[in-house]
Length: 426
Image: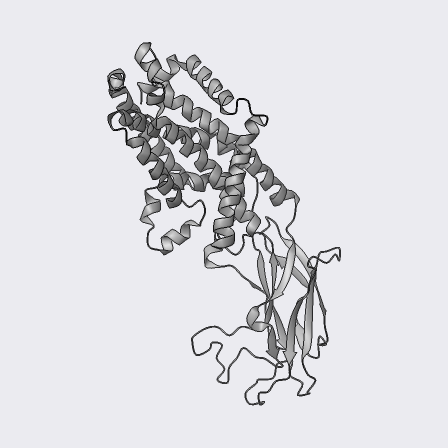
């Protein structure tokens, strides 16, 4: 490591020229130029969103809507694309520049470095897209709200009670027996409290046919789902099916969801002994809905941790240079290395939680894969800083920093040790 840095320092002018030439030659003759650096990640995003979000229904948690999931994927794609491009190109960099290494005194050590710098600079063109989307959707554009009825409560009998005949609150399977309820949800979690109002209508009469305890809804910061109870009242009068319609509006009275959710009350066919009478003396409270996978969820937000972004890019560059230098030298001894790297990067990409949440790997009992995956650590801290405005996990950051410098030292040492053999091997 100590000997590779002086090599790069002495050749810093040549290194800079190679980087500039590479960036300019990427899209030479293209009318859109560097804009392609933004388009490519977006195209990949649409492809993977179609496969993983629409077809396979991949979700990170119930607090994240489709928009937020797409940004989580986009951040991972941008980080991975820069890394994978650099490693792939570095592997063949000595073979591709054989004429320089064989015919002139040329500092071969700058080849993996300039390719890595060029790839990461190209990657950085996509980062403002992510930050801009977080600024808009996390700070300037509040999420829309909706209200719906749970499928198994579309129709309920009058006087429905969650307490069975023996006074239990669970059924024979051990499942909790909930009250009939509606679900107020946001299209994505918001970084601050959100306030909404509910309007009740329909053929059923509030206070006579059912009890609704809440007219105002407050979703806590970071929450996107809230259950609200609807308590049917038994009146022993045959009235036929009656409907309860609930519409959600914002503080200004504007309807947020075109179609109101509808719950149907039917005259109870159960005897009084089987159905406990419901009145308004029950203490039924609002229940926040937070799934086990979403307990550590953070809404989209920009914050002070964004200052760590340059450090993360530098660490990724250090890691990539070390890896690229090792593969570049090793490829001269075994030319199949370049082909294996292409396959290996594909496997590595799908072993990294870019298109799926990490907890799925842990649930499958394969958490060991994540324990030895430096790119998992990087993607997680990268998302924390760019998407959620939180300080990254210090363990992940420390592990990736250690892996980066260790890889840089090992890769650079191997490269320099065999550098005098390069002309003969080429």
